[in-house]
Length: 320
Image 1 (cartoon, rainbow, N blue to C red):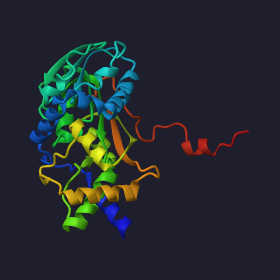
Image 2: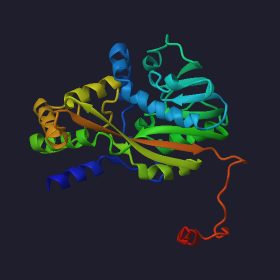
Image 3: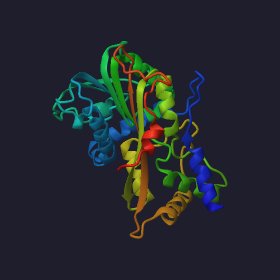
Image 4: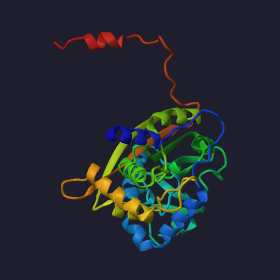
């Protein structure tokens, strides 16, 4: 019964998208801006928690490096304090345009020199200012999961790309922080006889390929990875999330968490997921996205029935 409840709570936290044109407002964008500004205002503390975003940004940069093409200008959408730019080299691009809704985040490390030319622009990810067919490539790391209309944002990205331009992104997946989410919900059921959204909903990996295709991208690739970080307790985990500017921004969130509920959640967390050494794991599921804007040179799939060899026969051939 207890494990069944955990599975049900985990499924409820996944974020699903419908194919209707209506955009649902899930997140309080103003609250997210305040969180990011507050985190960037304490530069020294925020730098100590860059470890997660830096690691994921490095993996996004590696995917861009795998594309054997000379990009003149690349846009980093939702760049934050500058995580992808730390891994940008002249082999990837000549110029990186950092875009974020938080000016304080953009300017936190403004005096830090980088290998490539950097331009900073305050941009809301839900309303892009770029002209159609103007960008070589767009990258985004851990920003689009806070967008209310994800299909609409991807359509804007596709429109801004030049033909045969590429989009590479990373988002938190639905299993991110499932340990924290279920512990908080079980604690609320125990202490307050109900639950409220304490961890923001995330996208489900099974939806993303369809959403990219719906936005007009071709040759789409979606892959999923997990990063597990150990913390002394749930309190340190939540403090790091706060310092990252990754607090809850759901419109229907409750403004505070009762002390006894928080203590109960930390105890449940350690009991259900704790390691023998007393630490607790926090799982971050990362969904990586790649999509290309169609062009005259885009490779097309062969017509059905045009194959001249049978895969079944090939698999049945035994080696001599």
